[in-house]
Figure 1 (tube, helix red, strand yellow):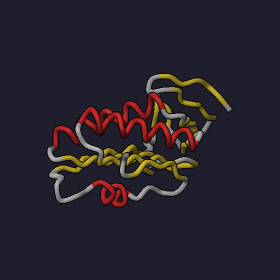
Figure 2 (cartoon, one colour):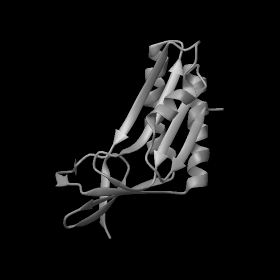
Figure 3 (cartoon, one colour):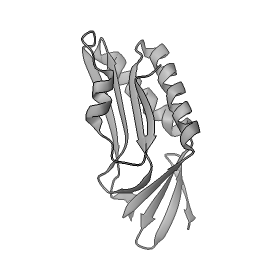
Figure 4 (tube, one colour):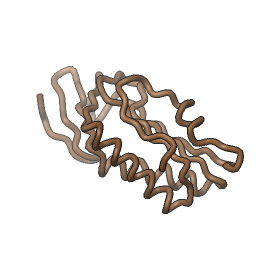
Length: 145
């Protein structure tokens, strides 16, 4: 079981995730922070809203962590995703992986963020000066509310 897998509606504390995975037998702690940027597809982003089916999303985060642990040989994984309204510069997702060596920790981080984006029931809506767009996956978007 992963050290920490959570959906939350408050600011993410990277230190909490790191503390959850570090230990005296681990020589590497790799992290990934997804941060709200000020643009997408040529438009200026004012804010984001993340929505999730929280109970299912947390279960998926656990499954992703377990899969990463098997693939990369470490169960020391934290995945925290924020929901609600986020401003430019806010952290939307934070991943920490600790392992004996850096290669495994770095590879696990990359694997985890890709799988979370593919599998977790978490949806993002971007807000611009002239409207909003629901984002569906890393490449697509469609006009909305």
